[in-house]
Image 1 (cartoon, rainbow, N blue to C red):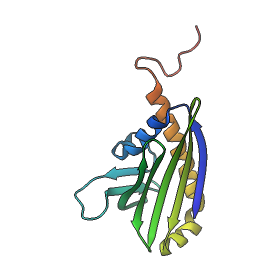
Image 2: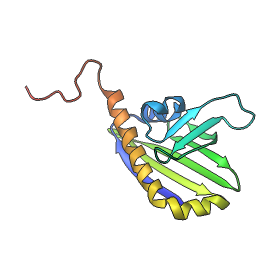
Image 3: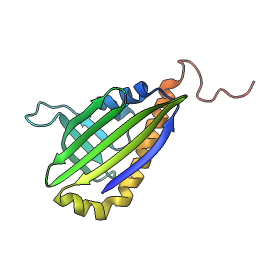
Length: 152
């Protein structure tokens, strides 16, 4: 299964890339992923994917591509059995950045996952994209300014 979303934000590509690359900070904004970095023999760390409040999947993750500020990609799972790949391509615009967000599942269990979870993955991607855009808005505010300044 491959799912893709495209959206724009009013932030620089470097700011977008920096937020995505700070996987330890995902707990501040990301609705589904939590990354930890125990000492491991394999992988760059552990990702916990919260499908629902009662169902979580933990697996090793691997950073695959980091081309500052245009690409951020990582994958998690066990090759051949189940592998999730997540990729963000960031393109500069005059007043911000265009983001192409792609999620791919592969492997034997991945085929089963595709049939059962396609709609949930689409919903999760929409939530992730909205959370990323919201976090970038918060980061772009000047300290001390209210969220909605109101009319004067």
